[in-house]
Image 1: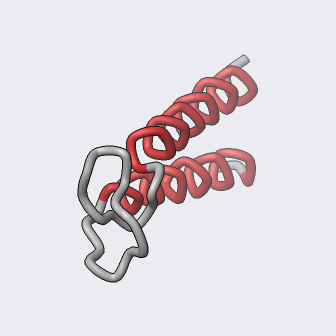
Image 2 (image 1 turned 60 degrees about the vertical axis):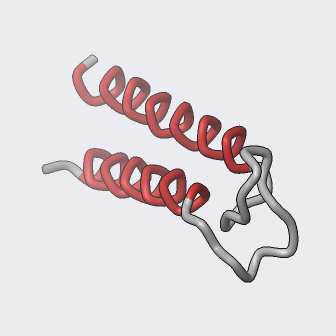
Length: 68
């Protein structure tokens, strides 16, 4: 496995974990998220979608560079 492949996998993994983490309920949050509950991120649906798009974009770019 090449270094670029490993870096891409790690970045995709981190972005995916961050996307899930933004949606996890957190009672200690200062204010509710846009969905109405207290989550780890107050911009939960938006930040989750941005992180998922970033993970998909990283996958597509890495796939193009590695295979292409």
